[in-house]
Amino acid sequence: MSQLQCAQFEQMLEEHDGGLPNAAAAHVKGCAECRMLWSDLEAIRKAGTEWGSEEVAPPEHLWSSIRLQMESEGLIRGTTAGAGWLASWFGAVPQWALASASISLLLIAALLASYQTNVSTANNFSAAARLPAQMSTRSMREKVVEADLGKTLDGDLKRVFESLPERNPLLASSLRENLGIVDNLIAVCEKSVREEPNDALARDYLYGAYEQKAVLLATATDRSALEVQ
Amino acid sequence: MKGGVASMWWSQGVGSALFALALAGSAGAQARRFERHFNVQGKPVITVQNATGRIQVRAWDKPEVMVAGERASASVEIDTEQVGNRIEIATRVISENAAPDALRADYEISVPAESELQVRSDSGNVTVDSVHGDMSFDTVAADLALQDVEGYLVIKSIGGSTVCTRCSGRLDATSISGNFQLLQPTMDNVRVQTSSGNILFDGGFMNRGIYVLKNYSGTIEVRFSSSDSFDVRATSLYGNVINQAPVVPDRHNMPAPRNGMAKSLFGSMNDGRAKVELSSFNGTIKISKRE
Figure 1 (cartoon, chains in turn purple, green):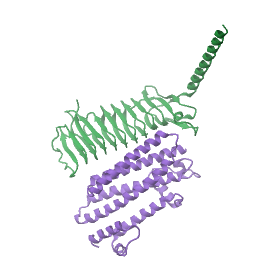
Figure 2 (cartoon, rainbow over the protein chains, first blue to last red):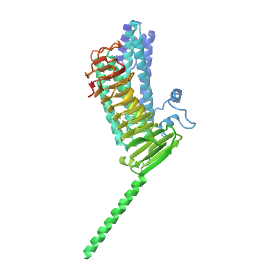
Figure 3 (cartoon, rainbow over the protein chains, first blue to last red):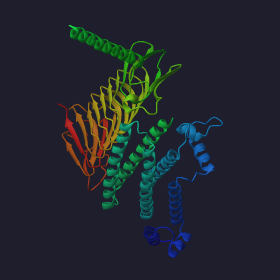
Figure 4 (cartoon, helix red, strand yellow):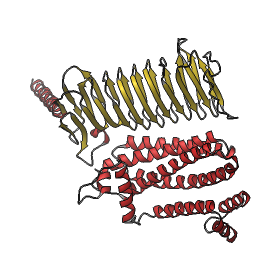
């Protein structure tokens, strides 16, 4: 497949929210890279939709695999029989808001790590001919990441902030005030990226701002979990 | 005459009541004060969790950790636990309906100089004086004042500011809106990032030292002396770089990254022994000569 077709495919993705037009579907069949991109986008969309629903419990195998992964990386320790790992992590009363936030954090960590890897990979490519396609795919992924990341974070922050106790108003007000600062940063950085889409530095700052928002979510989740205890 | 006696009795009654109230208040304050002692050997690890209130940690020369302080009301309890050289101190809320002010606890903690500290606080100041062990701080709105400390310092704050005076060792610090002031540091590895806060580094750059200071807005200021030796890379994407250092083109032939919009400064001062990286999104970077 030519790069031109790949670029057109990405354009179609931007213009069509949801299903693939016929031409794009045909292109996906023959182009491994675009197929991978489409598959990633679908996974993110699906995950975003599932996490948006508060009533849906995550499948047991998802918890198990995340737990095993985190244990293997030494991020958490094995739990005693009879106590759920989520309960041991977040306290005696697991709250779906907190669990959802933790999943978002895992997603954000993965996406940011993926972004870093992409940057590094792109920087190391010696074959100049592959760069346009690589960069194009990367920028496409990033657009989706930015959009979904913002929505996911906002939804989780709202839930976690609502679960913060009223008895510590200073904590809540500080977190809210800093959320405003970070949102403002994100807006400024997004404007900068829109104006200079090829400026890697501006994009780095944008991702840094999202990271800050994730840190804020982690802190709010942490404090909220402590208060539950 | 009767009026005089009545008046005297009345005044005596009021006096007695006030005295009783004062006694009761004193007894209450006494009951809310706490002091606990833990014998330790070598380098203890001390963990403090206190959502609201002041935490003062000071080094002393006894092989003992003393935890003293006062809780604002009976709505909070002070939990302490010692397992060998590990001591955990935590403020626990026991009344769900207490007013925010009633949940405060103030600590004065004396520790052996080589202690390791892990402090977690949401609001209220944290001060550490003369402790020479690794330490980590996790705060939300609490301000942090460190003085004459040495070790690997990790600071994570949301809105709290940090003043580090005569700190040695290594520093990793992040905040969203907190300011950082490093005064007379002797640190060879410093990484500080704040989003909207200011950063001030007022001290010498050590040979082989690495100093990475970053913010989005606000001011980053580093002050140098004429004997300092460092390579500097300063970039503000939409802000300004103000430089007083007599830098020459990089002595180590490192190419300067290109960015059309950014205000940048790349170069070496003296032999370029330390590495100084300053970056800001739209803030001002100042490289000033120390007075």
